[in-house]
Amino acid sequence: MSFDRYVAICKPLRYTTIMTFKLQLHIVTICWVLGCLLVFLNYIFLTKLDFCDSNIIDYFYCDIAPVADIACSDTTVVELVAFMTSTPLVLSPFAFIIGTYVSIVLTILKIQSTSGRHKAFSTCSSHLTVVCVYYGTLAVNYTFPRSDHSVNINKGLSLTYMVVTPFFNPIVYSLRNRDIRRAIENTFLGIRGIIFFQ
Image 1 (cartoon, rainbow, N blue to C red):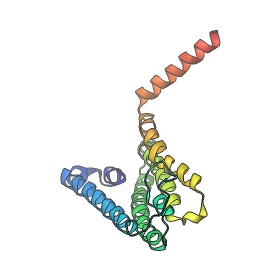
Image 2: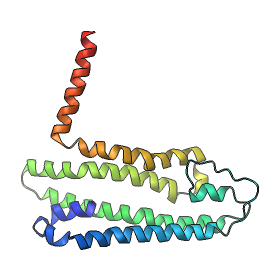
Image 3: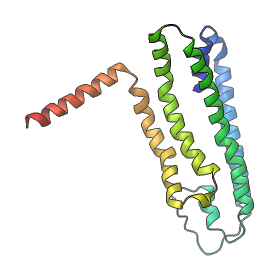
Image 4: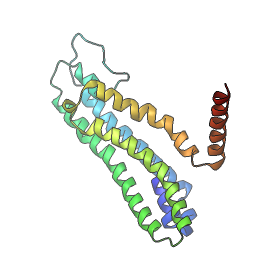
């Protein structure tokens, strides 16, 4: 999405020739294949562990670290592989997104009209907000050593990027639409009027 915004704002006249269906398919395919391969690599090392009596994972989904926590054997290699694969998997897309937004901001600052700058900034602000929340919680959860924070903090961070971010995505993007904003304002004014007159 950040690349789409980058092309739309920085190279608007070439948008249709750059953002072809073929390019979009390549981007999606690379993201999925790379993500699946790196996760699969983690699970290969996870299967090498020995597990004893406990089969209860203190987590709400089957993530690598909670499964490694119930292993009886040494998990150093699994933790190292998980760190080495998750760091580029989390930080590379985030760095790419930040790079595209730096280019976008530099291009926006060259726009002469105030309304044009405002429109371009408002187009990008919602996506950047969601990206920062999502990648911020991912980075803290997967790139810092697990000993630095508790299991409950990990659960909260996981809940943030798995549930809260997708839940707020439509809300954040919808609030940019004037009709939806007006409908929400009318709803709240109506509710306030009902409460006020009772």
